[in-house]
Amino acid sequence: AVGEWSACSTSCGNGTRSRAVTCSLGDASGCDQAARPDEVVSCSSTSGCAWEVGEWSACDGVCGPRSRNVVCRGSSEVDCPGEVPAHVLSCEESSCLEVAGNASIVLRVVLPEPFSQGAV
Image 1: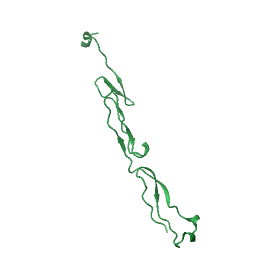
Image 2: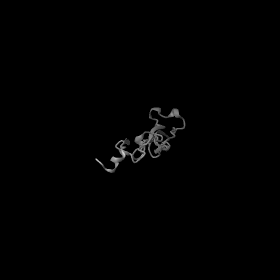
Image 3: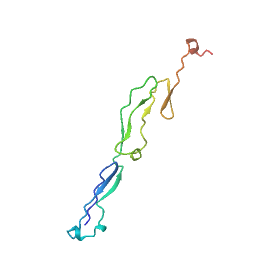
């Protein structure tokens, strides 16, 4: 006799499922052990996978960047839904410009007072 499979032992990542397997003759010695069905098998689930994001760090200097920890709880990044949340950002000061790759560069130009009025 073979019972129903249990749910996967994890909701995010690799786990196992199990079931009861008994000899219908009552004594296991009366059944062919080579033909015995599996009692435990591997399984995988992603239904409980979720992104865990930490708090943003303080801005580091004028332009940053600031950062936070981002991990897929219980499994690898491929199992979590959607795109990986940002883990590095500019501090968005007026003297900073966000560029590809979540990096920032400084565009601060300080000119003497006579030149700040548009003089060439």
